[in-house]
Length: 464
Ligand code: 2HG
Ligand code: ZN
Image 1: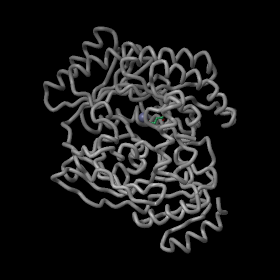
Image 2: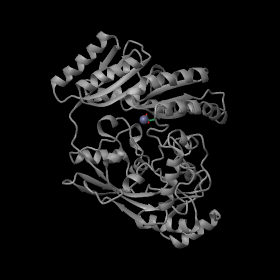
Image 3: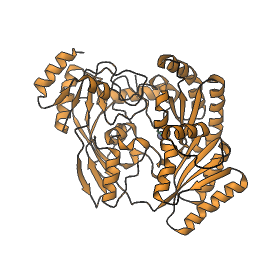
């Protein structure tokens, strides 16, 4: 690897119109994501403004075998955007244009640095809807969403980012432009590279343009927050609502997660009763019958004892207030440097799996506070362990990591995933073998060699 001063000299010479920064404050902010377990140490940050600039830059990096770390909204939680070993960070902050809207195709073509919420708002202005939604949508960028196949709160109704990408332009590790699918609905002409790049965490190439699908604006919805008596009960509640109505979200949180979110954001108690778990659900309610059905389900749950209390939104503002109890958790616990696991199993396996996890956690972490929340309606559970104030980050990470083999072995027993939606990145890299076989990992390496022969695309992430 050439020295960073030499790299900068070459970049200035060969990519003269490229913005290059070595401002220490910028290296600090742009050299990492939301994870706090690794220190950023990038050589420099570059801000390309066009596909041509990206292609040229990657071409030079390929020649020099100089590692690149793509950087979007930096809201990731697995260290996928950490430049901890002197890499060059490629930020997409200057590629934020909406390039095209096509009303007939119902598609939107954007540069990778466009913020997720901007896409949602633009779609609404066109009387259409972009359904991918999650707490970090106000800062996360589309390129990063694609690189991690972002999920979020409405996956059970609308699927993942993958389902909304109709076309992609990518610069691979040679600096060559790859055009995938051109916005087509049908295309049976062989391997669809688009799906290799989605979820590849920047290890195969850099997303430089995306064509997203849009859909109809959904009917009005209602949000309920319910006090649920246990996990078996949680799944029964899910079943009753899911059978009777069109659910757009079914989330859960543990009692201590509720306590933390209330403290962190100064929120009032949402209801009188206390419960070990709470469900936050959202259902389409286009007419009075559907609302009535929702209330009937609620009463049924009260009768059969699965739910002891609950509230339902009567307006959009109330719905947003209820969502804060769930979406505000991650931010509220950030000061505790939480150790995160992002797990998934099939929905039907959730109660038994969570029960097993809970037992492991109680045995191994009796002195740590462990919070549960997540997208239980699609089988995705977020486990957060809070760092005791007196403990160093290093000692805490190591203590948490010691139990990971047991947690992940249990996950494997259920044929689940050690990363549901946050990606493998740097922090879960050592554990990939719990979700993917050796042969699979070799296959992934072989694919990487095709698109990234010089090993410059986010090295060390995902595959190690
Ligand atoms: C969420 O669902 C995010 O709130 C963050 O995916 C999860 O903080 C986490 O562990
Ligand atoms: Zn999540």
